[in-house]
Length: 151
View 1 (cartoon, rainbow, N blue to C red):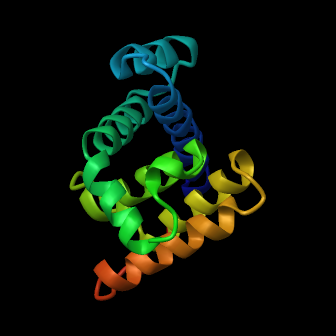
View 2: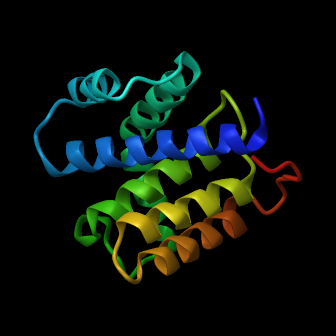
View 3: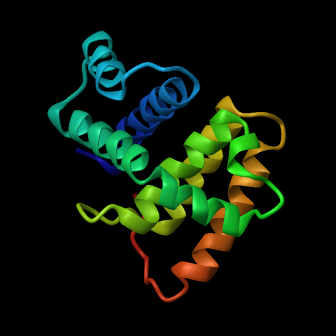
């Protein structure tokens, strides 16, 4: 499979992850039911489904830690008051950057994807905010990580 096609599939998976995390965070819906409903309504390859599960469950299970990282990087923006889209985008990106040990997506690819999701689904300022938070996190936590391969 070519890089462009893989990147496009991963973009669709990240959109699904964003929408699932947003729904779960804003409602009392059970995360496993929301995820399974999404997989039923929008079939995808086994690889994409595994990536979706990893993003959704990983970001959700680590949300307290990820939220602390967000608040350190943006102390004037408490996570509790943050728009749901921005919060979900940042949780997904930070999970990929800091926690995911199954694969290491290049930093630039994670940031670009997060900024695109923020542009597509967030407010007018979301993409700048997301880019700023992720830039701060990368400087603080990942400055010595060598990423030369693009997704």
